[in-house]
Image 1 (cartoon, rainbow, N blue to C red):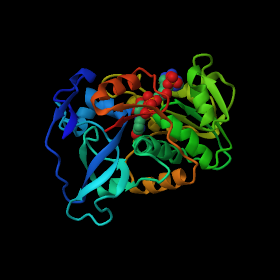
Image 2: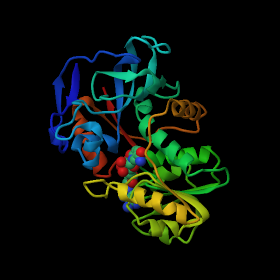
Image 3: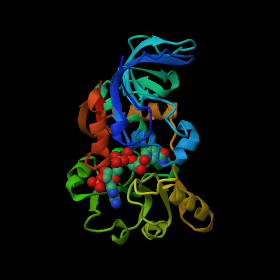
Image 4: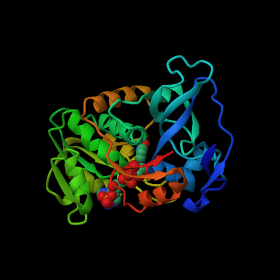
Length: 323
Ligand SMILES: NC(=O)c1ccc[n+]([C@@H]2O[C@H](COP(=O)([O-])OP(=O)(O)OC[C@H]3O[C@@H](n4cnc5c(N)ncnc54)[C@H](OP(=O)(O)O)[C@@H]3O)[C@@H](O)[C@H]2O)c1
């Protein structure tokens, strides 16, 4: 089968399209014919081996343990491994796996769900990593109906879902922060207001929020706390401007250490795939409350171009690979 592989960590130049053996599903796994694969910042981190902390976390100290990148997936079940009870060959599914930038990939049965009828494979492949992160972040921030929410990085992968899910879960008012050229996208997702951070820092807006969800920009905690209501929550999801050792991890750590001593609830998110989230997201999608915002679609051979576009900050929503 064709796959995008890498043997060393580095920039997108380390990736190449190669013929490799099809994987064989193990216990609890299925073999997927991949139809589409999503691109997210995590793909870049695993390709680059940065921040270095991820190498120590088990992905390979000097070279990547897995040669094939890609995590978000949509495809058709081709074969099932031992112990698989829920899925059968022919099922159209979406979810996550290791190595979706390939014609075939193995995925754990638990990390897949039936593809919502409303979505094309390309749309479905854009959902799981970013939307479940957004859902988990809103839950960690204890979103309640009637809350006023600020989403920093609202035109990005996580942000485009966070805006829609916050509205769907009853937020009274959602403000999205993005660059001006993407304001139309963020409004179209249902945001009640948009702040163009190139003109005004959201920390200077004078408004207060029950929940601030931070996915970009590396703003100091003290500045973000200024715009929280007295018992408001701040959830740090990420940002791409942190150092090469732990990335933006120090802000998440500071949030956790400071939180017991202040009235605000400060948290850093480490999202994990949860089968129950796929169910919640599927319901939101089927109800029409949640629709992936797709940027561009690239063929498998152009994965390096897709990742470069994401890293350059040009994507409006999610980039997808068509396999
Ligand atoms: N903690 C976790 O478990 C977890 C899970 C998934 C992702 N993440 C991390 O979360 C972050 C966001 O991921 P993503 O997939 O949404 O990335 P993304 O698709 O690249 O989106 C980031 C968005 O932030 C905007 N942005 C850049 N600089 C900004 C600034 N100074 N202020 C406000 N917005 C700014 C960018 O566009 P414009 O500048 O044009 O508006 C872009 O739309 C990444 O660092 C990722 O690694 C963490």
